[in-house]
Image 1 (cartoon, rainbow, N blue to C red):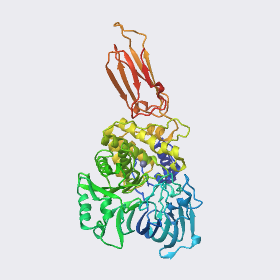
Image 2: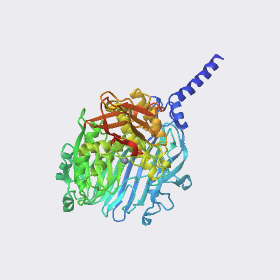
Image 3: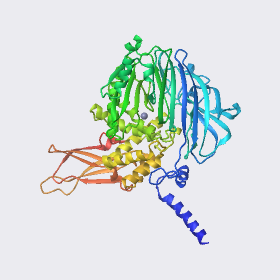
Image 4: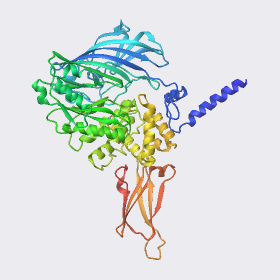
Length: 625
Ligand SMILES: [Zn+2]
């Protein structure tokens, strides 16, 4: 009886405990993970945290003339979950171009194909019957003959081929010219199975981004004679392929802080760069990365340098730019990327760049892949911001394996926040943080799952609002505390899959403040930042004949933002007043009152600055009579 009472008491206590640990809306799937000790209330991974992973051995062969790619792969999949899996889900992202598939945007009709052709598929050596395969939404589900038990593994072998989309507007990949290719998402990848959603299920339609498990890759890329490959990971066999003079340059780039040319277009065309081989077979290896991409060309220039990313160990990252001779901006890109990576490692986020290499490839997009970037050529004043934006994605979502299908703000918000400060610092500018989009009927809060959004709502919820939220948080906590919260969050979840509550809770835990009052309006609520300025002359005139003035700042919108005032006085002097968003911590507070020093007469008062969003700026300037 006493035991039963204790049991009931414990149940009540645990139930209450969960409700008490956050004042934020808290979905049931998270509740389940917190109850099972997979994730902790202080923001750490729980004692029972698990994630599944794979080892990939992939051989691929590109036929540039026919635009055909074929491959075969052996995958060992480790089920570290406590669940018995009755199926395995493969991602076939090239099925974006499959007849009848769903797409966010139209594609060139000439690119529509039968999708990925699976030529051979076995599990643990046994062929998978057609009846056990179900193809949908860029996935291939395989019903397992014998279920995969918890804490066990299986071997999957698959051979496949498909035709690359040739339109220059192809999403995130390109046939950049007849002999230049950027090729991501090409191999059947095992989808993520996690504690929050089970098998990842968002259809790939070309708009929303990705969610990957951390895996090891050993990839061989077979290219015709005369082609160079750039890829995720470290190149294993440069000495087999490059002539000594070019091998020496490649080796030198690993220690040289100056940008050097590995080879130019003219050198490639002279035929002296590569050894005389029938085909060029490149081997790349990468450990604990979420995905693998590669690029190939027979005429691109290759610049490279390296940069110290960890002053404690002197570890360096090899930074490359591969580009067309016609590109103007790419001649600067290796330098920009290396300087950007140095700033990322030492300042923002101030965390050693985790990868041994990064290649920025002159393609058709602005898109990140582990250790690879596909960037179009852009204008001189945009190239820095684009390059550092994509390079900073190395932290989010690659080092921190966030789920972009649900919470794209957990990576795009950070990349936009970093790129603003990094690009301003590198280009010696002080630009305005973009705050377009507030107060529109398509604007949604970031916590609306990204998979549910169209392009415009996605752009705002994934980029603009979180970037601005992080900026106000930085202002409020101060750079030291903000940096501590951010880097501890990174330490805790590096190589894992944090969700939003692990981010919120880590900042609450490390800052020692319950910031739920800030998270709620910025991430969960509809609404916008809108402050209103009024300046009033007080009735009681002082003896000297000068009036006293009071400034009123009214919070008309629900999103808390700093109060930044510039006051120009009649005597020509100026004053700045800055109060962080914390001013609005108590949501009942509607008006902030500030008295102007006795004897001072304001001429003009301006509310706001370059880093503070404001949906309705009309009432933010006051001019005295
Ligand atoms: Zn981005």
